[in-house]
Image (tube, rainbow, N blue to C red; front, side, top):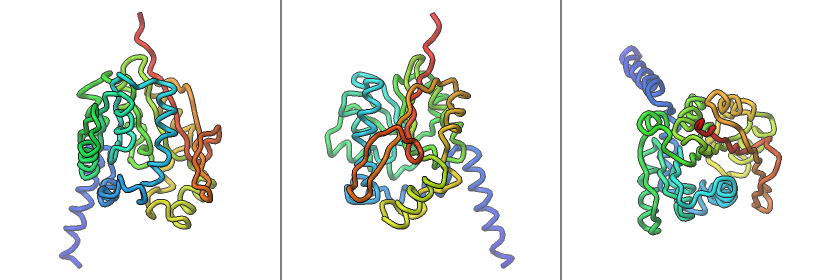
Length: 256
């Protein structure tokens, strides 16, 4: 037993250092890396992302038309949203820290012949220091509930947007209904997502996300809920933000 303690201490120290220097949970990165090869399998655990993607893409494009715009997708994973935005004519950069998922995204773009999309392994915070105020539109979808410090990501997204640019977020509310539907229902009863995909304590109430946005200097302009009927497997947008929801925020324009 005594011989195993140093290894445990090193692992704990290593994980803590990773969290301190990069706003990412090593366990979360490993979880999505293990599933990387299934990102573009429409019958896999990522099927819900494929099914909701047209809804979120049209909502984003309806508020901030992306054709010809410079767009950043933070936490892009296997590139489902990034690829579709490029196909609408945007110049897209997708960033993530799950390297295996990025390789899948790059391979898909090559095989599908998608132009106008590139991918990088870099955190939002590091990219914000490198390229502040560089993007017309920034998206960060289904990602905030997986990082240790969501406020830091929100601030980085705000810093990356040009003055007058739009920043979009989506995440999951934290309440009994969301616990029953998004975790117990989706992960344990229906098997729509792998068990352990979401941790209840990491879910984010709209009031909390709104506070992060205000602190980052973003103006909240639009909110939308995303609902799902598991029997018909139909998704739709609504005013109900009690489970899945999206924010459209805008960075104030530069003073004249």
